[in-house]
Image 1 (tube, rainbow, N blue to C red):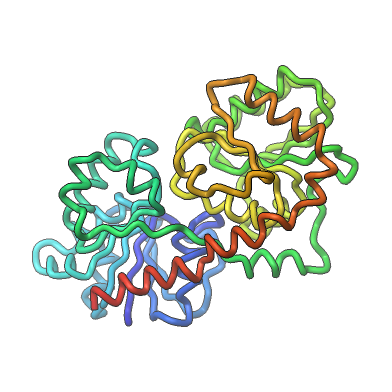
Image 2 (cartoon, one colour):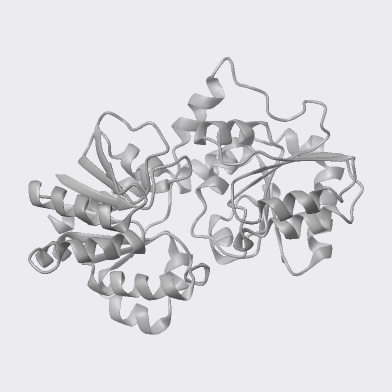
Length: 357
């Protein structure tokens, strides 16, 4: 099988590369095209090209590769690259739409109207559509679900637990949290409004606790979040470490006591799955993708992001029970691997790929 995968960028947080491309690297002959330059070291088994940030350059690259290769499957992971693909196959290669699968990697409410419009075009024209879990599928507008019902599969995201095990077993892992910190809290996500880091900082501003907080991710809100964090009690150590490699992010998870996400919208977040397997206690917003993860009840608290007292109470619970929580890191490990294995996800996608050949 020869597969062309199209994605915005190959970077540390890119599920299309980390879960899909690497997961299929030995099973499928893959070419991966991206709009942006690659930000990770590419595996030798995978052929890549990029548009260097230019839609026109990516358009020309896609045309070149589809003219030179007889692809069995084209897997599109993003509406922008998908639209570029449509222009690249017009008008003489439109039959490739019969080999095309489009994956919606987020809940519908997360997308801006422009991207919702582009997603609709891709979902209507692609031969198969996959959503990253049931909650992502349920978030679709009813009228859209009516038109794409027969060609849609809700495939639950999976994570690579073996990768976490490899990181955990490394002898020379760097220490990222202060070992003397009473509670170590990790927040991973782009520093944008939808990820809602500000709600967490606003709550911290009302508390006087001893803790260390690390934020991983980049985004347009970084400067304002850093400025707000300076108002918070000195007993809470806060740092913003930017975008890091997946391995470094996992190292943080393995050290952290608590993983928190007060996000307003998600797909089915890989970072949350990895943190659960790594042994973190979870504090999650009450949104459908987080509810779909559903960690063991003794290892997770769900909070209403509009209810400040609920968030405060969740943090107080952690502070008051931290030693007990540290001793139960293994509880959610078996649950996470049995329900969210990347192997199960890849098997489901392999079935979809096979149906296109």
